Image (cartoon, rainbow, N blue to C red):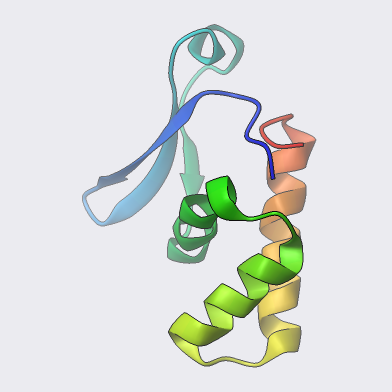
Length: 87
């Protein structure tokens, strides 16, 4: 998956946020709060070619049911696509 906008992931007081940097900071005002699940997915994006790759890695790490993970991954990726953050 291709990350189209410049963001860095930060943990602030136990919460995760995506912080826009560079040109992206002019387009997006403020921070994007994300869950721990979102942070895990975000860290996989540079090496992920498919949604299934992310789902498989998530299952390896957390040992949860595929249907649940699939829904969570789909929801988070849809959020990122909605804002033009990924392709």
